[in-house]
Structures are given as C-alpha cells and as structure tokens.
Amino acid sequence: MDILLIAGLWLDGSAWDEVALALRELGHRPVPLTLPGQGDGSSSATLDDQVAAVLAAVDAAADPPMVVGHSAACTLAWLAADARPARVAKVALIGGFPTADGQPYADFFEPRDGVVPFPGWAPFDGPDAADLDEPARQRIASAAIPVPVGVSKGLVRLTDERRFDVPVLLVCPEFTPAEARQWIDAGDVPELARAKHLEYVDIDSGHWPMFTRPAELARLLAEAATDR
Image (cartoon, rainbow, N blue to C red; front, side):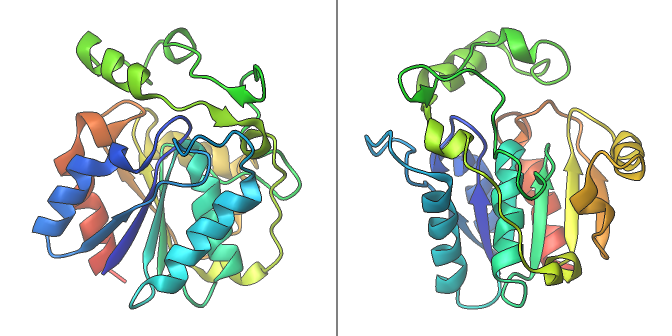
C-alpha cells in the first residue's frame, strides 16, 4: 500500500528516512513528501500550495493510499481526506489533531521576515522532547526549515462531510490515548469528535517518534495500512 508521509513544522521528507526504510521492509510503499516552502528556497509558499502538493500525491498513488500527518501536518492529512474522501483509504495522525474549518493552520509562533523559524527547544520542554538526547536535538535544529507565513497563517477550509467516513488512526506519543479521548469528548477536537471510525494507539515516545522510535512507528503504520 502507498503510505504518504507528511512531517510537521520545520521538517521535510527526509525526517521519514528511517521510517520509510522500515515500511519498505514490511512490504509497503512509503512516499515521504517534501512540500512547497520546505527547503526549495521559497518563502512565498502558501497553505494552498502545500495542500495541492499533497492532493497531487494522493492522485498519483496506484491505489487509495493511507495519508500520514505528523504534528501540525495532521491538518494536511485531514484536508486530503476532505478533498478526496473516496480516494483516501485511511488517515493516520501522529502527535496532533486536525485544525477546525476557518482557523489558521499553525499560527503558534511569531514570524520573522515572512517566515517562522525553529524557536529552539524551550517551548518543547517536558514530555515533547524528553526522549531526545543532545545530539538528536542539534541534528533536528540544524536541519530545521523556516515555515513560510503563508503556510502557518493560512486558513483551513473543510467542505465535504464525507471526510468523517474516512477511517482515522490517532497515534499518541507524548500524550496517552486516554488523554486524547478526554480532549475529544470534551469538545476540544471537534473534527475527530465526528469521525465515525477512530482508533487510538500508544507509542512510548516524545513528539518526534520518527527520530526516536522509527521501527516501532513503522510497525504501527504498517499494521494500520493492513487493517482496512
């Protein structure tokens, strides 16, 4: 099965290198995506540009793919389900939740000169980064790609309620499945509250399991791709 892999803020497709290798060994076809504004020298890329790139990858897949989003890119995966509800086989969300219609994509940090640079590790102190040693932190930070403000402040537009029929797997790294259920039941994640086929799976990691638990993450994704 084709498995499209979309990393979160400041990351490009290379973030999935180890996960992709493991997925291939498990018999799947990983497709790590590097989107407009991710290292191509353009700071003018928009959220619409990134959505278009994801949809092009969905359309290019031989069969309906599973679309995987990490962190902020969970919203990109969900936008793919909204735009292609009959074409996306499943959505897997890692360490994040879909942004609601009409809200900014990822307006979490202040931009500078038209981009949002990596803010350093202080905002992620605690469970998010507890499993990253110093070399890993330096490696991630040195490769971080500033996010164009046209992406981070782009407004999410969801239009097709058939997205709620697409099966969803929520991978819970720095939070537990019980915490995620509590947030969803409380109305904090309205999009997933309406998902008709929602599963949860735990992974003992911080916010970036593609770096700290790549083999385990690949196994979870492969099992989700097989169980359709």
